[in-house]
Length: 156
Image: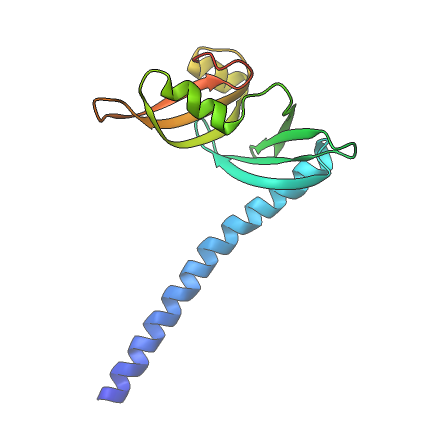
């Protein structure tokens, strides 16, 4: 009886590990395909970092350099993939975006850069372009999402 319970427990653990692996590996496959798409369809030649932006649709955001050492963001999304590459020069850094959010006493909890295409810009009633999304806690304790233009820090 104890042997049967141990085997059943082991099989349940194996099933959970396989299910988790399938879930994680499918996400890695998307990220890997998006990274390759960014390398093939943007100026980025070497990727330095990656993050996910989810304001309007899931975007794989890659930061890297071109052949001349210039820094770029590549925003990859859609099915089939679309990429928008934006030079990082002239855009606020994450620290600057956090500072913009903090000016009114808000406490940044999480900060991500993303790209608003035409459809997303219409939803947000703003223009197309790169934005910083700051998940912050207001002084009264309420959690909110704040959006700032990545080039000038103005609220979206």
